[in-house]
Image 1 (cartoon, one colour):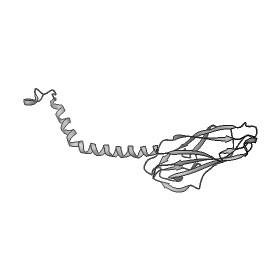
Image 2: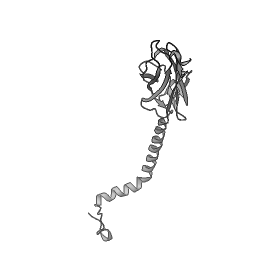
Image 3: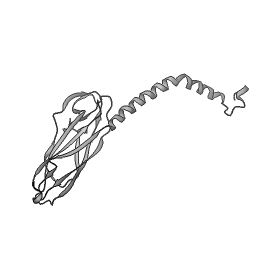
Length: 190
């Protein structure tokens, strides 16, 4: 059955069964808008994870062959977010933050070091975990090979983490880091 009267010549004819759907859509429209708003809130919250920055630097910035130096990674998170410690929380879990080198001619000495994590109840996971909030600095000692020729060298890698805000957790995410260090020769006055 089609609409009659002035709608009969209208460019859109609505079958009788469809009019019930249109009426239902208008009745439930407010609840649809509210559902969309909560999705929008979820989406905005998820996008805050994108506000992660990683800065890599060396101390010192100029070294000699055979000398040790520190590589520092400063990770800043959006307010209200945290990442997990480098230490595994329990057997078989994948929450621990991991740092891997991709390009590095220097010899790592020891393990990555982190500040003392905060022990907290993670409501998103419903368990007590070790976390870092807002910002955290990881560092590792590296040694310049004794036979390395002078020049500027790149150190790069990825830091893999999961971020949570006590409502939701991100999937594991990898963020690149990169810095350079200059290795001097004997005549550079170091």
